Image (cartoon, rainbow, N blue to C red; front, side, top):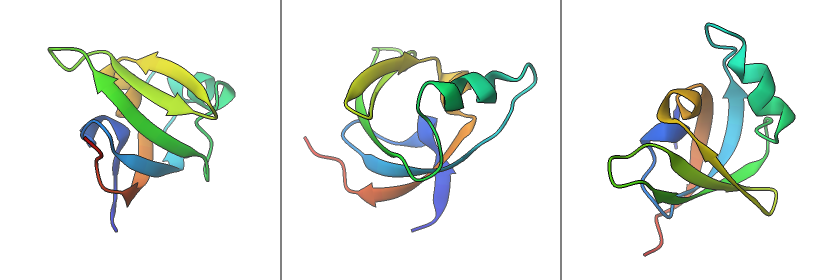
Amino acid sequence: MCPTRLSQLPTGSHAVVLGVDQGPSGEGRRLQEIGFVPGTPVIVERKAPLGDPIVFEVRSTRLALRRRAADLIEVELTGEPTG
């Protein structure tokens, strides 16, 4: 599988975090502090009707992120979308 951005995955996708960009204002550090660290599994739970925000499950916790924040997270798909 090839790396992609977390914001690009469809609902129900399972992935693993490969890395986090820092972003223009250092947002990447905050993302790492809340659990988006390399090697961590993540599931795309649901998306708002217009695609922003997106709800993810990380370490048994549901987190909502704006699309621009999810764009900072590089992942590798590990499972096909369910449902």
